[in-house]
Image 1: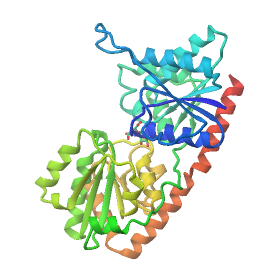
Image 2: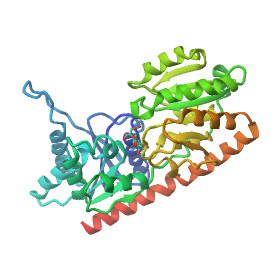
Image 3: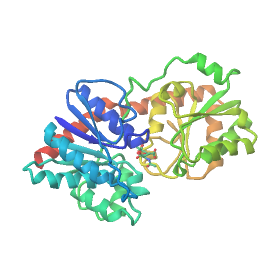
Image 4: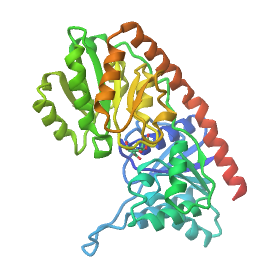
Length: 375
Ligand code: GMT
């Protein structure tokens, strides 16, 4: 198939899923055309089946807000016509689904019928989408999509609850490439971070408020009192400086390392013993899946789709949002007994295998075929 993929080209979860999906589809022989405003962060390889079409937004003094959605729709019209695409797959509803709908309408005037699939990722529904500023357009464009997928059952349920949806929504969970995300021998790195054999806790995110990164620091402050340990904070965003200050205020700054944005995240996960994800809301929790694939168990909240990934008492533990004491207590329970921790690590990997790319990719391929056939 010739597939157009629209996404945010950043390190955010939806962009990562879209890019990894495109790369995997290209490897399976499909021709993949990314249409976005920058080269996607994870589009780091060359393949004869991968193409990148940049959306250039022209500036004009009148435009306080340059109309990206129009530029994207126009670029989609251009790419679909000249590359003769079979289907478009847009990730994150805003503004990608409405831009795809506009492109579809324009292409119809050229006698071209292009179906489009919208994948809902989370905040496009749970935070931004249900805001009245956008909700009529989000509702309309979900209903006008030729296919709609959500990354968890919980997100599917939320979408029906928050919007007036007449369309079917198929759940296709996120996936992991176990060739990339697996335990790597990084003993020298482990020694550098934890020279006295301390346990290593890790958090990776975009440091937005929804991630409750302050809770990560607060949980660790309790853990380090009982277990010799270090905390690695990976990623960057608005809350990073707040967390740095909090670590100083709590007197634990010497045990916390802020590593900023990192490409080789699997190497950091490979030296880690426990992943912390105390999010306010999380439609799936891709970062937790990446950790589990590297044999790192997870302490998370039970928000959103997290219970569909992290199994309480098996791959880690889940507690209510804001239950810092509960999460710290469970973290200590796991870290204080090496045999117990080893079992949790095995279970985390076994669970991650359920979401192996090889299992999930055919679900998307079959869905594309189904949508093309009925459109
Ligand atoms: O919150 C993020 O990390 C970014 C956001 C995005 O859309 O880029 O992530 C959402 O999509 C990811 C991939 O499907 C999910 O794993 C995350 O759970 C989801 N984030 C939220 O729901 C807060």
